[in-house]
Image 1 (cartoon, rainbow, N blue to C red):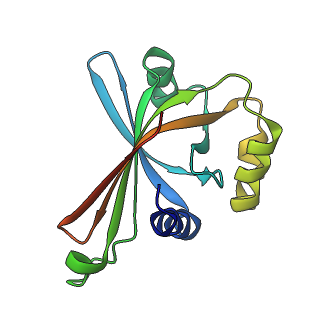
Image 2 (tube, one colour; image 1 turned 60 degrees about the vertical axis):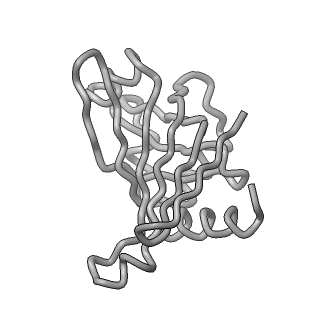
Length: 145
């Protein structure tokens, strides 16, 4: 990944606190708004969710997920200046490190009670691909091994 593009992604992910998470379980597709953090190497997204949700149930059935993060402002300039990133990955719910929990909590300290609740689970999403759209015409894909 080019360093310039890496910096564009880091900047976007640092400024934006929320993403849209898409999950699928069986015939059902769901989208939800989540608070997220990203590792510095851009290989993992971290978020938390209650175990008693459809999104969690869907991820247990089908670990393939998609996330969408953007910086649109609903202005005409978005057609030239907005950045939207679709992230394709695999949800991993076992053995998520304390370092990842701390990364999540450093970005979202106001969610510490929620994130540390025993009824919730910390999810690590291993990124497989980024599809980055700048404006409405410039599209770049980055695939991880």
